Image (cartoon, rainbow, N blue to C red; front, side, top):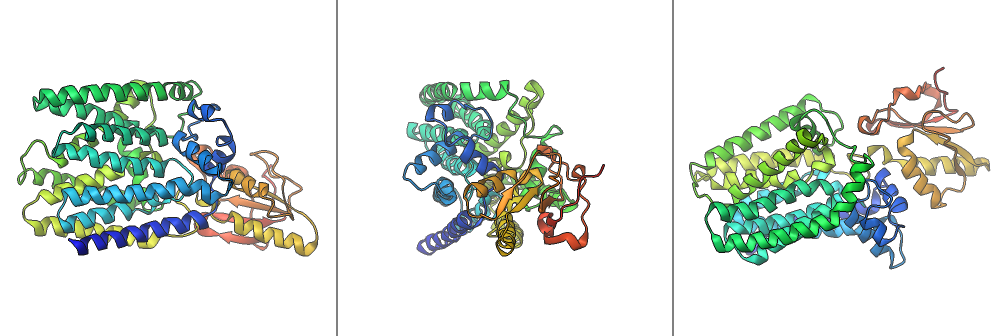
Length: 480
């Protein structure tokens, strides 16, 4: 047992070190810059009430950044520190969950799967609310699954409290919180446990009241201003599951392998869940609790789409599903008494995740805002050209880079670079250099070809094909 704990510790330290280095080395992203300049300077009251209103204001994240900034250091690393620390919470409760409900081998494999997703780890090194939300959710899941062992009121309270903090960090995880709230009341009702039903109902009512008071104004404003615009309109499978899979594979495109990987995973999960019932027919188990929670969370997303026209959750907004899917898979395989079957399956899954992690773990970019990966490198090069020539170089760019470049421009680290962006649709005719993003961003309305850039090979001074990013000298003008 002691050796197993050491392995857990080593895995956790490696993951934390990776995230810590990324928090220092990865350049600022579009939404981080927006958060730091658009929301952190607001008062605590304005942050909580979502004034100004936009879904980019992840309340808990913004509040913590503002609090950390009070110590005087306003660097990007300090802004990211709350999410870096949230990884410690995630790791600690991932260990407690796997160590409490799984065999040693299955527990270690499950722990690895939690940490082998490069897309998920991205958000523990960014100043966004998703890492915080995942850390709080893992704590909530642990106390929720403890219901399979005991009905302590403290477990109910901690389940809802940590889940609620997750909602304040990422509003889309409200789907998870509503699911656990329903189950906290329904489970003792179905099992005819009157005393537990009374306690859980009271705690649930108080928790729901607190959440309603806190969220009413922000949600009202977000709906009224049509700020909940990021999502899909096709189906839960096509929008939520496919996007979560492709970004977990560090791709913005749903190429055939994405569908294959997702379908294999869902097939293995479904078979594991069904087969596990031949070996463990108990009603109140951790597996059944997580299965019900996952089912209700999915039902919440789908029902909101049909009842209220809400968009399906996509990529980062759907990350809270990942720990539930992984936990359900491992709990199901753990129940299979013919251990070699369950162990073989989980080892194969871990091997596949290891390969994916090996291919995509990095220290310089994110899967979502990949186009911001080389902003400092480009600015440094252009600044050096200006220093050599003794003149200020005028720089224009495709508009998705406006937030990160604007952040660095305010740092005054590039005295020979002047941002000369006039508007999103046209290239400034006086620019010396132009940064071109040669990939459209559908969900935010960036059409690469609409820019009409006509690249000429001899004018391309820097290129980053993996990120579809190019720096042109003597920038070509828009097509007539």
